[in-house]
Each structure stands twice: as structure tokens, then as C-alpha cells.
Length: 460
Image 1 (cartoon, helix red, strand yellow):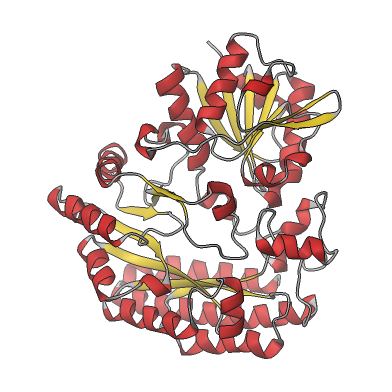
Image 2: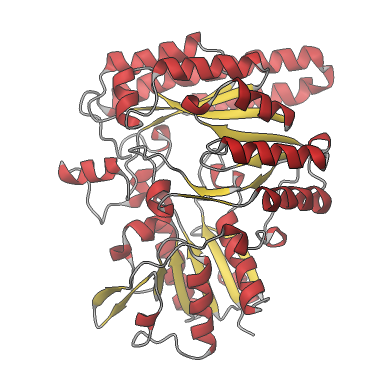
């Protein structure tokens, strides 16, 4: 039986550990699909960076390796692929958002790229390997891949998406290192909106849903197997279909799952109303995240293609706070024509808002997005960048990190970003003080968290 190793390429040195905060459900879905439809049960999943050891590779001793990578880690993925070829000389498959957008980034150490949704494509590639047909003269029949043949990049027609999504079994969480206090679940793939900075809509080509019964069965299994207290619904947009939301809530209440676990989810301001808030409350959702992006209507209209206004953002926060949710949000600054005054409008919005927590990012033009195309047209970007310069957090790589701002230089952006962070830290401090007074036993974790925050801020 073919031994398969999936490697999620991560940056082990990223200070915030955001890499390991969200376990990769992508490779675990593929693993479960291989198990069900191909009876390939000898599968392992690891997270690794450039320090991936030869000893670990020899311990797993795979016949075939699949690497998954986002843009900011693609240099790491390239190094991992080269090491695997050197150490083991086995077939290497690369997948994920980055290679899907830029298949021409396939290196000599990567045999095949899986483009887009990976379950069925990976299954066919493993089956071809089993038949000793993973030959570049025979790959043309497999849809949704890229490979090099005689120094030419070959790209086969895109594969149709899996419908219905319920064909895919629950992800193989037994192969992941899970934080049982906070487990993630996906109830859909994709998003109907086309925000200019989001690569998800390009990757998934629309939105599809797991059925309400599938979703609730998966939640029940998570509770039973892992005894969790909190389930984070990590859809791009969980609340997009109100009819479906009603049915999910009905089934959760019928099975009394809301009495056993709390939930968190993402929502969109223009879709938030009192009915949605009431449904989420009935489901036992405690925290809701919103992508508010900007306090300037002009910039918000650019980022979200005119689908939402600042007033709708404000109303959504107020409705959710009225229903006593913890509301977090993300903001994006540094759009191409955004002025300093418009950026400060976003800071003012944050200061007057009732938001509980959140983060502020400087716009990143990921491949496959509209802002990526803008950057290419203006000559600021190309298909063969140094992907280390796509670090999510500007302060992690302030001198080289990619920015597209025409109106503010990186020093100005960093200065304003620090003002945002001070406001977020102030809110975190206020929240922790309240928690400490309500729960005195939390005083030691609180003090430790403050020390960590002070150390982090001193490095900005």
C-alpha cells in the first residue's frame, strides 16, 4: 500500500504562531477522501518548515509526498520539495492557493501541481502512482493539474467541482494535532462575493454548501470524539444563506448540541439583521467575526466592490452587541489610492465602535486577486517575486514586505498600524481587567499575557 505524507508548509519562526493556530483542514479532507474512495489508509499529515529534518523524513519513509502552501510560505514549500527529492527521491505533488494561481511557479523538484479543489485530483494521481503511471507522458488525461514535460509547462483542463459536497467525508482530524479547546469546522466552500483582496473566490469559483444534516452530524462527532467546548465555524461566510442557517439551528437545537458546546463564526455586515442574530444566539454562538475593512466609504466600496457601506458596518456591530455577542473585526489599510485621512477614518471608526477585539492588516496583493492584477499592471508585481516579502504582518518585515499604497510610504503605514495596535491592546486590556475582577483565579494568566504583549510591542 502506497505510503503518503502530506506536508503543510509553515513558517516556524513567525512570532504570532498564526501558522499553527488554524490546523489545515484542506489536507485532512484529502486524506479522508483517499481513505474512503481509494482505500489508501497509510496517510500522515505534518506541519513543517525549512527545518524539516532528514530523520523525520526517513521515519515516515513515504512513497509519495503532497505539499500544501500559501503564497507567503511558498519559498518554504520550494525548500521542502528540494529536500524531499534529495533525501528520498520520491514523487512530490504541490497544491494550495498559490500554485493554483501561479502554476508557472512549479519547480524542478515538484512533479505535479494540483490546481484548485484537490480531493478527486489527488486520488487519481495516487491511483496513477499505484499503477506505475505517474509518467509525464500519461498525465494529460488527469484534469486539474500542471506539470512540466520537455521543459514546457503543461496545464490540463480545470476539473469540475465536487457536487454535492456531502460526497466528501468528514476531515481526518485523527491525523492532526488539535487544540481540543478550539476545533475548526467548515460548513461550506467559497464565497459569493468578490472582494478585491481575497483569493478564496478565485480558488473555489463560487460557493457550495455541505447540507445541514452533514454539518450537524460532523459537530456531533467532534463533540463525542474530542469532548470540545468550543467549535469555530471557519467558513468564509457562514450566514450567507438564511434558509440553510435556520435548518442548521433547528437541527442543533433538536440534538441539544448547543447545550454541550459554544460556537464562533464569521458573518458579513450587509447580511446581519435581528433575525440572523437571533438564530445565531439560539445556536449558542458566542463570538462573531466581521471583515469591516475600512471606515471610509470610498475605500470600502473599492475593497468590497460596492457591496457594503460604513453605515451597514456600524449597524451590524450594534445589532450583534445588542444581542450580547463578542464581536471581533478585521480592517485593511494601505489600498492603492487610500489617503492618510481615509486611513485615519478607519481608526476613528474603530475607536467609536463597540468591537471586542480584532486586527488590522496592510493590504496584501495575493495572486489570483484583483489587487494582484493591479500590481502587475503597474509594474510593482510579477509572477516570480520573493514570496518572503508577502508576510501578512507588515511589522514582521517592514523594509521589504510588499505594499501597493500610492499615497503613504511604509514608514507612514507602520506608524499608523502601531496606533491601531495600541487601540486593540487597550481593548484587550480592558477586557482582561473585567475578566480578572469577575474571575480572580485568572490574575496570573492575565499578568503573563500583559508581559507577552509588552515584549511584542517593544519589538515593533
